[in-house]
Amino acid sequence: MIGGVLTDLTLHDFRCFRALDFLPGPGRTFLVGGNAQGKTSLLEAICVLLRLQSPRTSSASEMVRMGSSGFALDGHCQGSHLAHRFADGERSVALDSKPNPKTDDYLSVSRVAWFANSDLELVRGGGTGRRRFLDFLGSQCRPGYRQALRAYEKSLRSRNALLKEMRPRREIAAFDEPLLQAGETLLEARRSLVEILAPLAREACCAISGGNDKLALRYRPGCGGGFREALAESRPEEERLRQTVVGPHRDDMVMEVNGLAASDFASEGQQRSIALALKAGQARHLEDVQGRPPILLLDDVFGELDPCRRNSLLEMLPGSAQAIITTTFIEWAGNTHNDTVFDLSSGTLTLRSPRIAP
Image (tube, rainbow, N blue to C red):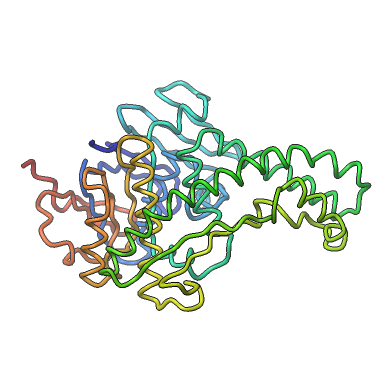
């Protein structure tokens, strides 16, 4: 089935862009340019418009062009008109010119799979990046996930603030139940997501590595046994450290390649294969859930791959998906006559080769 298509995007005061109009093609669109020209920021803007969040930062103010008070994004996807504005610390959204729609209605328009060189941190880095990966996927495919995540984070912040101040236990306990309710939802959802991702990522890793690497994923919850029991048993440690020490904020996803811990024993090539396999598995699952592939945003990943891994990754991605790809050079892509190609320099887009209809 044909995937969702972004037909146009307009940016104002977003990152390095004062103003920009972008008209991607329905298939593959390449953004070609040197470093620090705005390629990643343009992909980020697409993600922020469609998903109301950035894969690069959790702070909207960081995305505002220097010297401006806010940014504005506007575009059409799947026949819907989306608008997302941030000004003076406040965000506003509109769907089909109707302000303040239900967030679920807005987010149901399109799903997104994001690929970047920084995905290597999913293998090399700490658990925070892997939790963010699961949260980005869960918020796109699990009803109630986003709400549970926000409720958990809010309760956790309040509870930790009281622990830090050494407030009476009865005040801290007021946040136990909302923390437990939201946390149990997250624990079960993340466990299920890892179980679904495991065979998809294993298949993708095997294909990308030419059959050399066998990837295994395992969910490691941030509490042993039940969350309620673990929270009660952790009180002495909480009082000593003055923070909540068990729960989904301590979750992780363990990765092994050929039976060994990927973070410790995988080569850089293997780590790259694992990171790409996780994202390919994410795209496959989103396609299964939605019935059509997500929009693929690929930030300068193909130029870093050898020809074998590059071609294998292309074969693993949904062929009918709209893919917007940034790269410093395009020669690796072969025949691009049916693709849309833009040059991006100093925040200015120039159409090089429009798509030719077959």
